[in-house]
Image 1 (cartoon, helix red, strand yellow):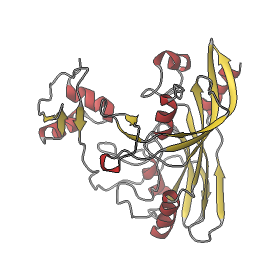
Image 2 (tube, rainbow, N blue to C red):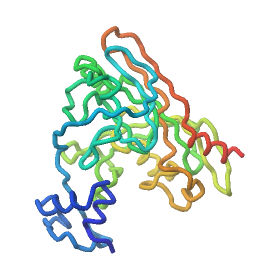
Image 3 (cartoon, helix red, strand yellow):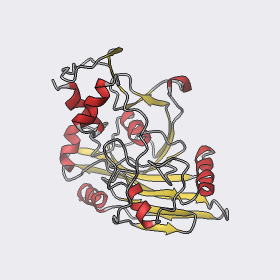
Image 4 (cartoon, helix red, strand yellow):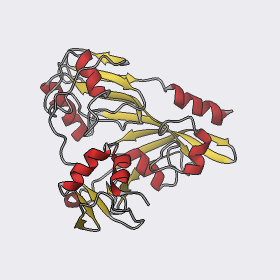
Length: 303
């Protein structure tokens, strides 16, 4: 059994000192009660509510980091984010993110709607998900892209390698998602949406591109299109179907992931984004190449 400060630091990617400060300030509840003991030992059936609070406004530093720019004009930039890079700064992690790189590349010209922590960011990718992501260089572009997300006219297509053979060649996963009541770091599937409880509609369209048999197990290469964009949506939907994304340390299967130990995260890639240009209205479609770790997985299971 781990100390609560150690456990929370590992799960949230924070320093122990940051976690301890939040605990001291009453930001931790265990089984419904505020707890301030930093050395509390986590029990298997504990219901943990940890409130890190809103990101504090800080002076984010522009950094000259490598960026794979796929499209850019004076209003929008689309980049191919590498696996392992956070989209924007979070508590105790204010460097080496996509935002730091964009601030340097765009010379500070990014929309300010999302504040100093997330300048230009309209949508995000998980740290260990690679691929295309768009950012707005001004507020007009930001508002347009945000409206397209809201009305579901901005298209996002992903590729993933999953464990198992999908029963159908294509289909729709329509299952509401919300924060898990059993494990605060996870998102869970619920029967019905309930906005008051932050359980929201979540819809993922899938198509099987290829099927494989490797080391006595079946795998599938999928194309996935997001109709909604909830946290961990693709990963949770597929895991719920018993077809987790390989390499996923949160929702995946450890005995399967061991066959792909070279992966540093889930084999999930944002392949394509398509949107109406915020100013001209022209349809912009940006595609990206599969990253090397993804190609290596395909090479193994095709072998």
